[in-house]
Length: 425
Image (tube, rainbow, N blue to C red; front, side, top):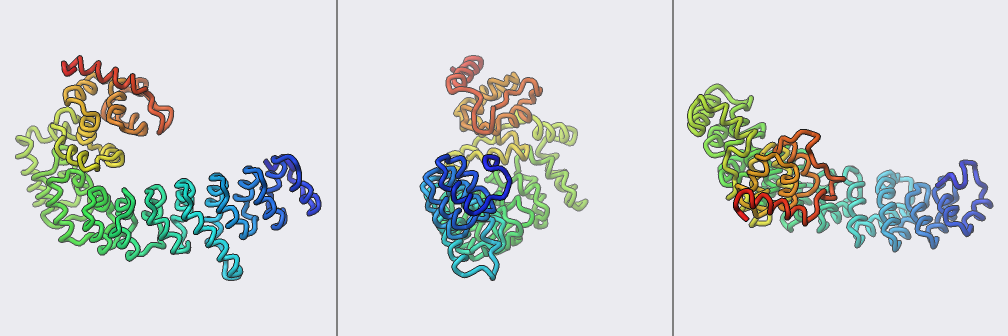
């Protein structure tokens, strides 16, 4: 928009004339400039045009006392633009800046952190999540936000939050997904791990187990390994965890799902005795040495030849824990049997119907099953590629990660079609 005025220097008197222009495009172009006097930018911050106020909001040259004014603007776009700018400007305020300027900036940040619109708070949280000297009380406000898109970034990344802050948040009960965000932090301490485990949040504990930088007391880890016999969600990160207590791998080999056995036996940190013990257990479970490789590979790469973990998935579903994020993690980990079971449970279809869809390698049928299960569009391509084994030319692609490429009527039609094929209509 600066092209409206060109790039030449403008005198103060000329700038005053342009600030009173009847054309909002001219005033907005003026508001974008870094060489306009502070008083004129403050004047433009009260302009009747939203575009003009937005231009002032994102202008780093605007005086700090405009920030509080714009933080209370009626337009969400103005406040969102301000949130992005002020979060970058605030940490750079030096001790030479007056206390008044620093307080004005802090007041504006506080207003944005308490904004009624989630998007504004989320933009601020994203901008401040990695800032070392961000105001601690602002970060704590964002960390306690009830919306995970606001609290999540600072819970996972902010260096400002202490263990005391995080443990208090866990005890109070953060937004859904908040404990998992804390569990993904780099270098989780033993005390923080204890709090995460004590919350008994299945998803959060799964993320903690998958975080190799997290310190977990050996006795606590040992207990989680024992409990994982009945909580399949914890088995993939345990199989991949770099440090496990003595004898843990052998115990896990006796109960983990078959599609994880091959990965467990291939761990590079097993001593010869442990490796032999695990191999013996795997041989017993899979029915003889000759069938080990075939069955393990089958379990890992052909989910249709193993029993899907329907009971485990049903328990997660009934508890409200079978979220899109949980399913996506299983998909990314290659746990196709879990994803298959999730499709069946969430779509409320018969196993034979779901198998038929994949056996036939029918793209429309697979997409319809995903849609019936209420899975997001972001999973469509991965499921078709990894589980459907479709050629690139066959894959049905969504327009984006939000828009589903099939209508509800088409989804129902394809499900009914496969129901009739399996005699389950």
